[in-house]
Amino acid sequence: MAEKGLFNTLPPSAERPPLAEPAATRADILLPPIQSLLSPPSPPPPPPCTSLPEAPRTPKREKAFETTRSDRIRIKTALLFNHTPEEIRDKLGFTLRQIQWAKHTRLTPQKDKTGLYNKPAIRSAQRARLETWLQGSPSRRRIPWRHIPYIVPELRLQRTNGRNHGAWAIKTAFKRIGYGRRVARRKGYSDDPEVWAERLAFAEWAITWSRERLRCQIFSDEVWAMGGQHTRSYITTRLDGSEQLHSSNLDHKYSKQPAWMFHGTIVDGKKGPCCFWEKQWGSMNSITYNRYILSSVQEWIRTHPGRNWYLILISSTCLIHGIGGAKQ
Image (cartoon, rainbow, N blue to C red; front, side, top):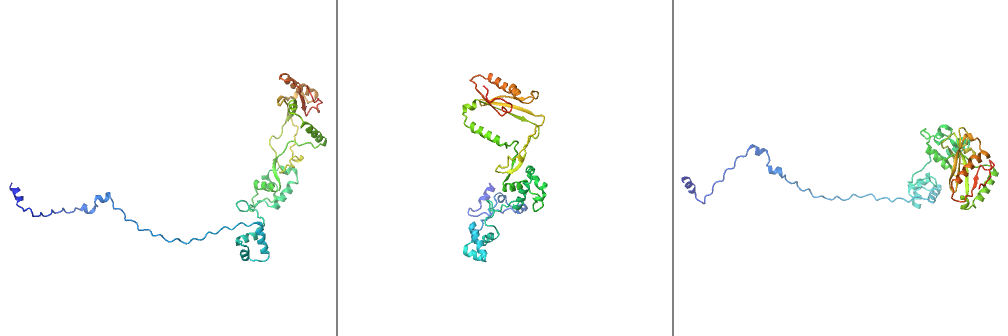
């Protein structure tokens, strides 16, 4: 009670003295407050951007129009009369580059779609020598193009760096003079005028046949399978085909053993009887033809009933072997 009375002895209007703050520790001095670490102060706003004035641009140059052949003639004519390029530019409106181009190029320069030069690798003089060499011997038409620079070095088909031209450049050179690479034919047409007349008369007669007449015919022919080359042979010939059937450009057939003959027929528009000509049958003549070929046709007709057969035999061997042209 005494203690309570002691405190009550102070007047109510008297202010208490402020409490003394504790002294700051060493850690408070060295470490920043934790609130400043959790929420760092925002950076200051950037200064206002001041727009710089645009630099003057170079005006875009308009593309000059492409000169025609008549324009280049006018430029060359003006240069022929000793007019300076500046005078031509002022009078005709061409640029100095166009005047220089027309001065040093042909009236019709060889240009591709991109406007660049399309210079052939093999020039005109070399192409002329190439054509003369090709026409010198029929055997030269069978030489592959890629081998020509090595076989015929006198044609001088070398580039400026000493290397030979490739097959593509030689192909382009041959194409410019009208030649190309084609497959050599195995058999040509007959050169006998009498055979020409007979085949023409037969073609003029056969073109009038009706479809029913064609269905009443037996087409018979044979083919030989012989030894020798079994790959294609290529030759260099004219692109228009005028030299492809020349005798020197054909591959000859040689009768070599072993060889087999296959005989086939077409009856009623379908495949008819066929057979291989056996070796023991001997050579083909009228007797063996009737025994082995016509007998097989008759047997096929007998085993395929269903219509009133009246067939006409057409064969390239009938006249050779003395066989009639019609068989009922």
